[in-house]
Length: 186
Image (cartoon, rainbow, N blue to C red):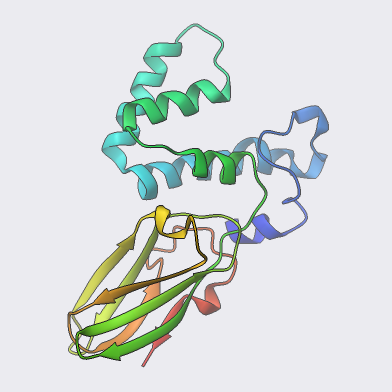
């Protein structure tokens, strides 16, 4: 559902658009749905519950009974988590891009298997893929967002045996606009 909104008629304005300048049909999307999903992504996929919850508690403590701006929230989360999240704020709250990552290759070699991923959208997020080996054993492969900062194509090696399938975003948490390219099967 989220991916549909991100590329549909509501997608042309960023979250930080003033309400009186937002197209009426996009107001609910931009004021509530997209920011809420962004916070869920930040907690569950980017920072993890412990770091996010600590940052949110600190934000409430710092800004209770004051008039914070979005930058105050962004700065507090970065201060407490110890992570530079400019890429997230810029892409999710100030941008209108889409997220689309694809499995583009699986190559076996003597030392293991190399899996290649391509970011075909404008947004970047940490990548999670589930690799299934012959015999049914699975493992989660996680690549940091920084892997996509300088290139749209990233490869990762696995050595757990013969790979029979690769599935991107196995929990379907990310707003991928094209899930048809999220899997590879032998």
